[in-house]
Length: 76
Image: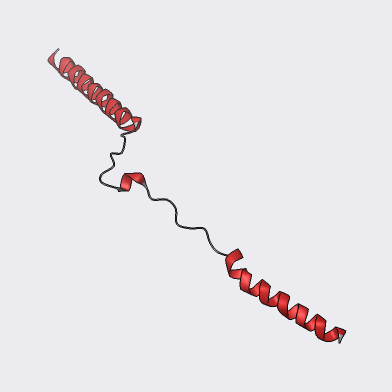
């Protein structure tokens, strides 16, 4: 009698465990959508754009100055 109760208890516990196992092993849900992917939402332009613009201006001035010096040396 005791053996049948242990088998039933073990079977019941295994059924509960295996029925709950998928819920315990579920992956995380989808990440929230990116607000910038929506065309109606305006995305801010970060300071990186201004940094690139400043570097471009400095590089252009350097090229202009080098060309001016080269021209000045060839005139003398």
